[in-house]
Length: 472
Image (cartoon, rainbow, N blue to C red):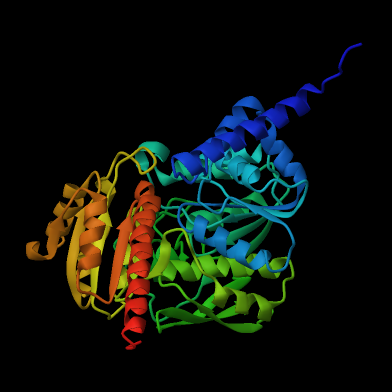
């Protein structure tokens, strides 16, 4: 008498078990996020596991591009989880295949209403071999980790080729000429963008793609929102922004939030409040709103949910200390750093800044991108008391700041991030901005949380002491 063992099922269960053991070890022993390694282990044992994820998700959305993937992904999840009972997603920003599998292992179900995944530009081809999306959202194309991706045209071409055979609806940023060029694929295309507003400019120092994707002539711009995103037209072949299906207009920044109008293709308008700074977040918000409307979610509910959104992964995330606010904002490329500095300039509170520049493989070994960022805009930041520099390449960012015209007396160097965070938290300020590169984000967040917990305990002890003295 023998046993008939299904080899595929056995490898699947073994992969799940191995992934969960890896996750337990990383989380409980090493205090790690376990956002990628469990999936990597599982894929070694059962390489077909992403196909299983595809089967279990009734509908799928893939989000790719350079900037905005994680914020858009988290915002979409925040919206969808209020309308659907089961949504699977890689919310911690691990956006290669192993990150998607890890998300599955952490939230194991037999079926999901939606699978919403951000996908790294370099991994998009391999992911769509197994995950067949109903929607693909493309945010933008900027230079990012040149030692890994090469120039932006390569990332653009790789994603274009991967999308071509897919039966999918494309949600495209109409204000990026490279993204709008995806219209040549003849899919069902939905276009979103940000209309001219008070923060639009006539000139832009960092424009990643100045040439027409159709004929290679120089594009002419009526205005820029940031980077090459704006209103463009080719004088030779007529290539221009596609008409918006959805757009954001009348942007105003007040009370540390963006207020704007979201306009649908039928001209319906909805007032939106998004509690995070940055014109780039207007694009992220517009992308998430566009998809929500394409699948028919009620607009008034969605607008309310957007206003309630809270982000917890180092993208303009807030931490409230007794005497100050700490805000963590990931910076990883010239455009992102430039726009973050621009956002800080809107904040008139007394402030200090901590830059953490690393050059680990996930950051990109080449840190020359900091010289392309417009750090000269720091002179527009009001009430800036101190700038701290830390990380593996602390000296590089300090030197860049010096050449940007920042007074040397304003700069303090400490390559130990723990010590640097301690110093910046002791600085007199109403708000502290922490600007880490990718591999420093989670560590910086944990260090801030540890100090926040300590601070809360101290306040608790103080309150108890005051009660005993009857001074509470």
